Image (tube, rainbow, N blue to C red; front, side):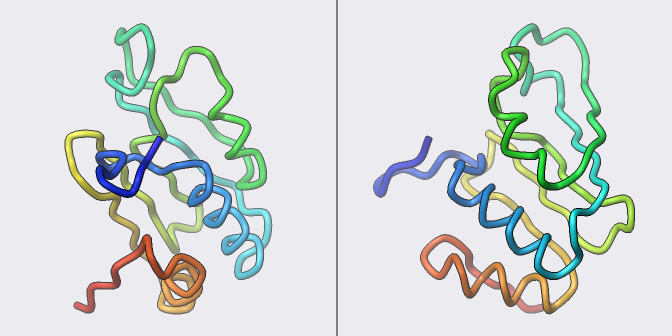
Length: 117
């Protein structure tokens, strides 16, 4: 999905998605999550979709035939972190508790830029 010259335009490649799953599992466990797909992230472009499941099942969603992009929103029901992807942007936005962001940034030094508020 990505290469070194041009980013995936706000999409998460499989490597970073797996890293997200690992960090969430280590810090919070196998959380219940919800995934929101805007209709433009689906193949038929007819309606938005919402999936519920556990964080461990997230990589399998990339294999579903009715989806063409990564989820527009990924978040746990506890609401202690969130991932927002948008193919119209040159980046993905990730928010959450400090321990979560620190660990994710540590594992993805070349792919995550921390912005302090």
